[in-house]
Length: 432
Image 1 (cartoon, rainbow, N blue to C red):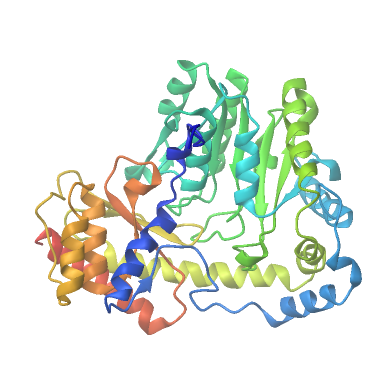
Image 2 (cartoon, rainbow, N blue to C red):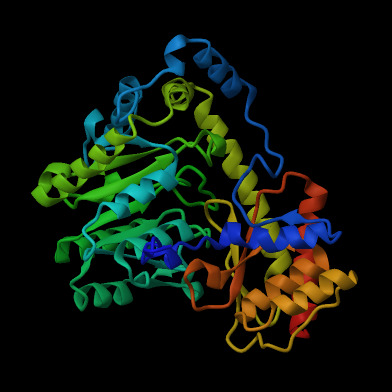
């Protein structure tokens, strides 16, 4: 073409969770049965939505208004309901104008980073969830800025590392946290959250908190919302129905804007996000209309508790299968539905292999592992030998070797096979 039409940050748009599927499809086409452990879709892994929630959706779509446009920021009644829910917690108070709907959290992430001034950076955790890290890097044109999560302290944020990076990089305007965390399954206690807010307050930053898993918390932890501890700091909280209903296909998420009027610059920034949504007219109407009826139903609380108990049992099952393997470090998840398996320093090298029965798949794996990171090498050999598709930890904007597996498989026998196979393969691969 006579002009280069490629955006200068196009190379930053990576999403390892989906990209690994392209390799897996090649293995599948070569005759390998695949087990998809790469993506957090409970429905794909066999979970059915509760009949009473389905009935609410049926009732909603029987109304004509569910088929039309809604207000740009979202259905007014739903925003009023969600604002009231925030205010019941105490802490920062909001109005319906502080609730803004998007077509899923991915859409919200795109807008939140995309309408920041280019020089304004948001520092996030490493390992990082790819949607956030890629969007922030693409917005800035530079590598995503990160602070460390410590695997030897339950994947808690290293507040000293965070504070020093903020102090000595005045381009940082915001701090991202994901609580409960993806990919580690960590849940941050009050003192950690208050420490992060204190850093934001000290340096005049805003907080972005992804709370998509906020009601999937277990192992004795409590759900703690950002609004409860943020005080007078400006913030954006991201919420949705994809994980806790579960309803990922709804593409229905929203942000809660906290302390919008505390800072004029922050206020104008939020207005720019609303203006961008106005160009799209609105987000999907029907899923928004479901929210007050569903979350206001007496059955919703027990629904959340039941699912949290299921994931707690699976987390303990996975931890029991994978802990104690030489060369591997695991923490039992406390929230969300993922586990990160970390390889100890020096455990991996570029000579390790696994036996792969299918000769075509074996050749493909051997071609793929040339020049990749050591954990990618393991993931390709694991996939070729067993059909299990996981995501390498280096795909989460991380310099540590490891991989992420889900806790979503609903078939008890298959889930036990997944964890026992991973344990067996790890021992074989590491020679232990």
